[in-house]
Amino acid sequence: MPVLINRSRLVTFRLTADEYESLKATCAIEGARSVSGFARSSVLQKVEAYRSQKVTLVDDLTTLTLHLGELDGALDELRARISRVLGRKKEAE
Image 1 (cartoon, rainbow, N blue to C red):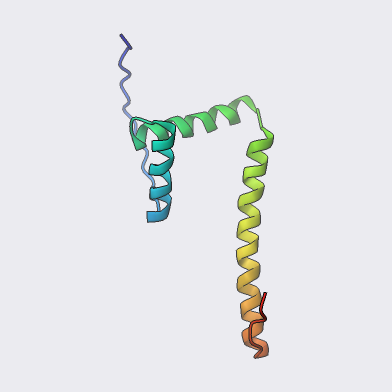
Image 2: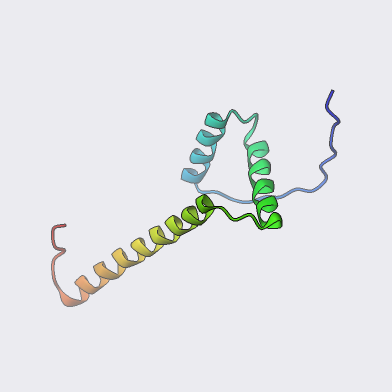
């Protein structure tokens, strides 16, 4: 029989509706018992990875992908602003 652990600290964070739906879907795929249990496990895995200084290629690629996505969005916005300033119609891609 597992020993019950008294968890006395609460961590709260907000998600967008899309983020929450993605989290719920991932929980279902992973077979997690609850969203909070999955979130706790995921956060603690990340903490342990930092603590042990084990940076994997997958983590690096995930971070790079996120940053490239942000950069792509910023460039799209900048391109649209430049087009508006120059008075040109958006070219077909």
